[in-house]
Image (cartoon, rainbow, N blue to C red; front, side, top):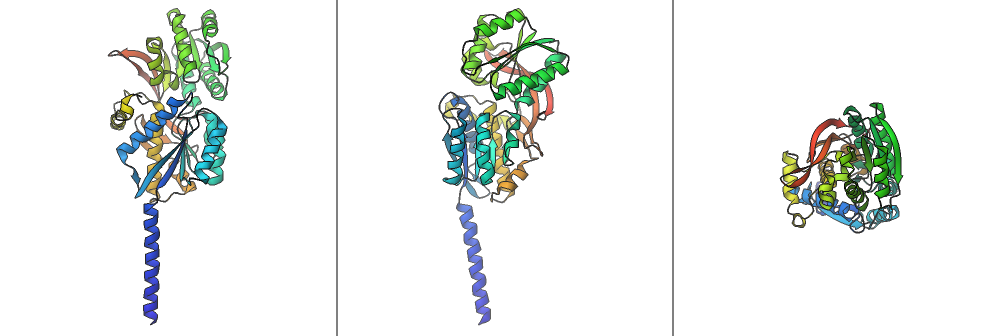
Length: 390
């Protein structure tokens, strides 16, 4: 009799375990993506969305036996409060397992507290201020930092016969970061900043600023402005006032000359030198697959840029951490597994720094040129596997 009871109890336990396993297998992985899909930063959000879509088209919508559900939330602009509120809703109401997106630095900072309180892994796909990953132990960043781009650009400029520079940056946190780290690299290499100006983010009239640069007669101007109207406005005004014809070089970071900007300014961008981690011209297997999938999204109307790559790579890291946990998702374990992970990316090799959970990657010096009638960022120098110096 006792034998039958024990057998019955064992069967009950086994059935319960199987049911629990089946329920886990059937329950989807929910990933909440917080990005601007309307307003002035719409193209940022669409690039991130396209990068995620390209990854899932290539790798499928299942990981470790679980379906992956992507839940998008639109911040409709750069407002930090919106990002924090949407992150809270995703965690508390939608019960997401992971968070992602957060393309604008103040939004990443605002949502960091939500990730920490709920122990939810948070994958930052842009947001370039160095301190972002310090804001929460659950943040992993697959893009870059402004210091990681600006410091080597300053070093490169000083080594390449640029003795004097004018600094023109947007008057907000990321602009201040970029200014400080370009200046540090440039001065350490023997260069001199002869003048520095900060532009209100709302400014769209760059005529007076371009004229001041011409009057100062530096060898180069370092420019950091927010994407969209500001960057486009400066490039067009510089071309109108023939800044390049005076011999003054324009130096910038990746987003200043991305594919969206080039489509808006055309030949006015020719000659601009920038530091960056991605250009579609890379010839590696991952990039070829990424570009092939990207062409099938939105009829190929939005060519993928570095934001799409950062989103694609965030999904790579997410899938790998879930696989390593056999389909279970623990916030602390996910962050631990992501730290130190190395993947092959459309950009080449991407390493997530073990201590900072930030991207370590090759940084290229590029110049806008025309090839086969199309504007491209042509890489002509490389600084290998750069860590965030900040």
